[in-house]
Length: 324
Image (tube, rainbow, N blue to C red):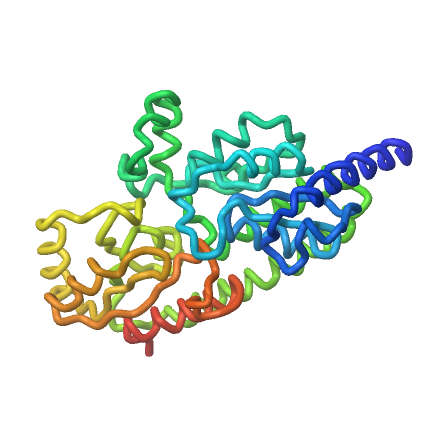
């Protein structure tokens, strides 16, 4: 057993050294270029995955994100340099169905530990074929019907603290298996993270229990899991793809629904244009506010990490829904 562990550690050192030479930017303050060659190197697809890797990996993990802060993750294209990152990493953590370019790149690498967050919880179909992203028809045609079905499933599980906790537990187990020298710490860190997520779930349950209305409008359909968890109804201007344009009929429908259901606010987000949301709000005489789908943290975010932004989301929902 000790021999095997030394071999794993040696592999991790080799991979980390290769990453360090690449002068790669890390999601956390520790970058792979700092020479921390003894760490467990994880390449995450975008912020919610990187956050999990950092929280669970702690001091033992060196986490880099394929999606830069402020970059809309749905549109990510993988560069040659990023493919090299994946090849040299100890583990890849991604959410299949959200970023087709990442899915393809991970499938083509020889990386030993591939952690698909979509397989660690249950994904539901909230948008049908709306999740076939614009400009990605070629990917869908090549992948066939099975891939198209996967694209129809809503990937935004991190916005439901309960589902995110399920993913966290799966990631923790994968880290323990891939880097057994630090398994005890990964287990401890996972338990602490799940406890915090359970607390966040409690905050949402209590904070949204009694509201004047249960309906809220969003820019794109990122909050279906959250809405289902807390007995709310999300009505999205666009579908699961934040870049898709709504029809005139859809806009009229939302205007009528706003009156019928006592909707006060149209939510928009920081990483995509707020033009359509603000136009709808103006025409329907509604307020606007930010409901952050947490696909990335920027200087415009209402918080520095997942928990702070989710608490800000809760306050925004309470105000919009008339929480008592």
